[in-house]
Image 1 (cartoon, rainbow, N blue to C red):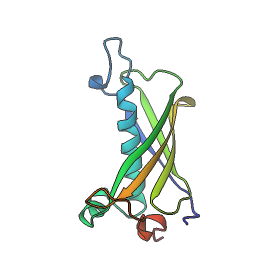
Image 2: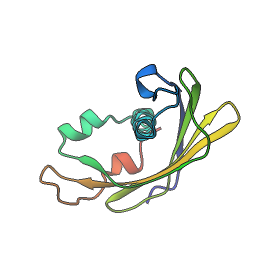
Image 3: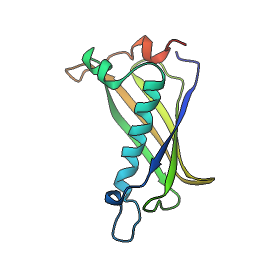
Image 4: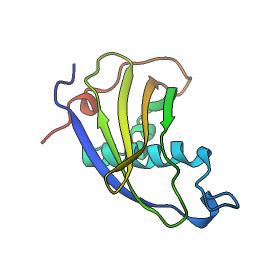
Length: 133
């Protein structure tokens, strides 16, 4: 079981193509921002999705919960924070906050399942659960 919590904050600027005609970020882009943060968290832990996939390890989103609190607008500067929660077995869980300055605009949680190339569940590799220093 991974005991150490890993966390990272990633800056995101709301792009024009992510917005509706009223310059409000479309709800569908929030999961993309979560994935950007999650990918950077993994990289900060010494791993990349590319290397995991090359080794036959795939992380698939099994559950996504997203609570919208305030709209994000075109050209807003946001911060997406992600924390990897303690885990064991075949899943990874993350908690997220998306902020504009001090304002919380969204909160989310994901559960990722670890699978092999055939889509069968497999244990999360130790190097992902307990990365080096």
